[in-house]
Image 1 (cartoon, one colour):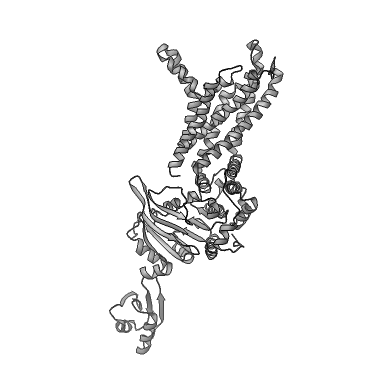
Image 2 (cartoon, chains in turn green, red):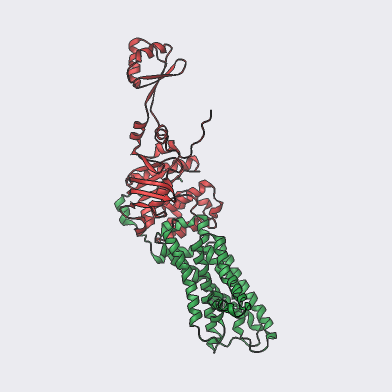
Length: 269
Length: 303
């Protein structure tokens, strides 16, 4: 702290002279700087990629024993049931980290329109996880090729590009679920617990009801509206009627976030 | 200019700020004083829209903070040094903050240099000392070259050089016609920095006046007299407004008279005077007199 500000100007000058403006594009830039300058982001993405590629290779090398007809694209998509957790956790810590450190106050004084903050964070973390998933799939496809008797049939979209694209979409939804619960709960441990519960634990709990006989089967049926089950449906090779699971995924991507926005809007930061 | 009108904030049953109105004028440094829990920070948080007032309004430059089109160029705010993600480096924190308004790297480097944190700018903010964190918070507040600065305890944890820098810097900013509102517990520092003082106590405005006026209204002026023939002099001094207290043998503290009149009287009586000191009240005296009843957390007097 040595020198004073060199320029001397009146208040009126400062009003007109400033070329700086808050805008949504600027906010996106800010959020992308934020997310890429934290180690936890790179750890999460690294773990997601390593898990995904490793498990794909294991499945691919074991697939010879599965008998014929195992769709090659499933080897790429199966790891999702593990990597979805990392995606959800990344979504949660993107915002809960701001609450635990107090950064949220800086964020909200720079952009007082709180809805814009929610949307900007969702876009940035969503795009980042989508890019990571695309790269991961590409590496996994190359790495598994030597182990697969039959490679991916690219001439058949329902066996190749469609499930892969919907796999990317599912990962984005898992991330947004974490982000939504992060905004809702503001607490890292709580948000991660709820996210893991919704993604991983509820499908198991619901499926248990399937064993309790007919009278409980309606609960087991509800399981298809859980994010993991909906994602499994849309990424199944050759799946047709995708409308219901896609809507289910979309709802999971939007509703927790909308709840988080409502909380952020009303509460003191 | 910051204008608060009947600002009230309740947290459950507890009223943190009650019906507070004040105006912080441009071109001056306004000090925000008050005991712990008086509502200073809550008021500052309401100004920048972090807390929503239960009732009442507050505007900056005539607008609600949330309606500002470029908040960082209008208002620079330091609420506490802990509004930074501990895992991010100081430079990256400032870059991210700057990016929201399209403020470039050059200005980021400028505020880093201005606040003297060049050597630690690459370090993670979580490893910062209190003083360094404070400098980083001030750097963030300055990013948009704002017309209004709101600084909550800016010198908290700063070294003497940093304290002096903040004082000179805010005085300089005010001289440019900017609005500066700062809180501090350091009375001597505030006395040297502020032109105008708003004193809060138990969520209410206890005083809102020019610093000199406040000190004059809430303190008494004393004259300290040391003389070998003190009793004769004191006897001659008596008058309706004059009170004399003897602090030690041969020394008296007299209020209600000026040093000049004591000196003249002594000369006319031929009484030698070894010391004649005029003592004016300090901001601290005024503050303590004002907030005596409004202190929420009182410490026990040591016997």
